[in-house]
Amino acid sequence: MTINTDKLDKIVADAHRNKAERDKSYREQALKLFPWVCGRCSREFDLRNLRELTHHKDHDHFNNPSDGSNWELLCVYCHDHEHQIHADAIAAAEAGHLLEEKKHREATHNPFAGLKDLLEKKGN
Ligand SMILES: [Zn+2]
Ligand SMILES: [Zn+2]
View 1: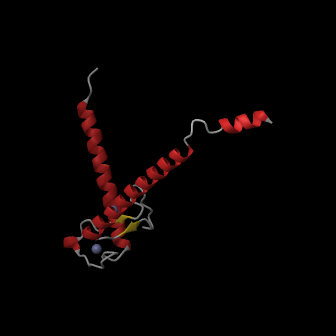
View 2: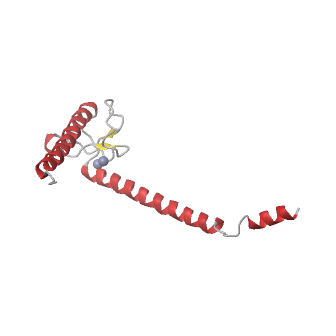
View 3: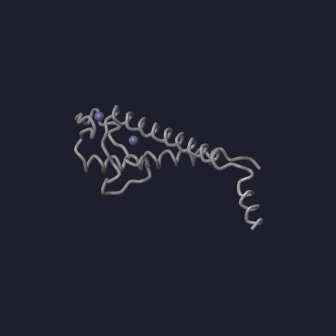
């Protein structure tokens, strides 16, 4: 059996187009709903620099409620900053979680835990 790369290419191309269309439509809606001002630094925008003036509050680009409640207009700089904070928060949360888990394992990992109880119970 041969892999039909044409078909694969089409699927990939479709996926890209769908994403582009989805992003475009949510952006258009967001730009109708909100003033063209960055939500962080209040920089004003016009048609020349309107690129990348949207952001998903929960970082889920599939979550596009029509009331715009998941959207926020951010300029490129604040947007990058916001995503950096988000990435850092995830990394920190993961690091913290792993650390907690490690502590937990060290505190509870005792191969003879329970054995003492078992013996004591038997002794009664
Ligand atoms: Zn900004
Ligand atoms: Zn974003």
